[in-house]
Length: 170
Image (cartoon, rainbow, N blue to C red):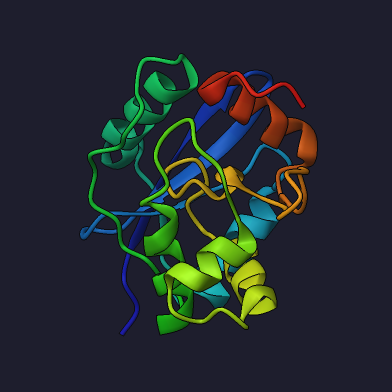
């Protein structure tokens, strides 16, 4: 059975983000460089729904918390999530949510924390599949040597977010 996914839009700088939720909670946020087609493909192939309904009022509270975060007025999110992914992906995403605002960890740190120290590449893959960037802070994961690596939104956006959160100049 396919769940309904409600969606709306919000602006981040000069970009349009799509925000999606089910009755259970927030399930997706697109990155600034993602298109509607990418979002629709995610809904069909990962969330396994054909039912995308544009209902901005259903995602308004999520958009508000994102706007507060982007404005530097929110450090934690208090909203229910409805995650679509494998058990392994979900374990990685749950660990990412434990990274405090203003802190960074390495991919190998995340692998260690979930009890899979040799699964660094799999962890990187799960992080790349994160459907709720910003809220699940994959931008806080950096290379073991402290360099910025691997961010679907682009390293420039990752650097902006880290600069906003912790003053890291990269």
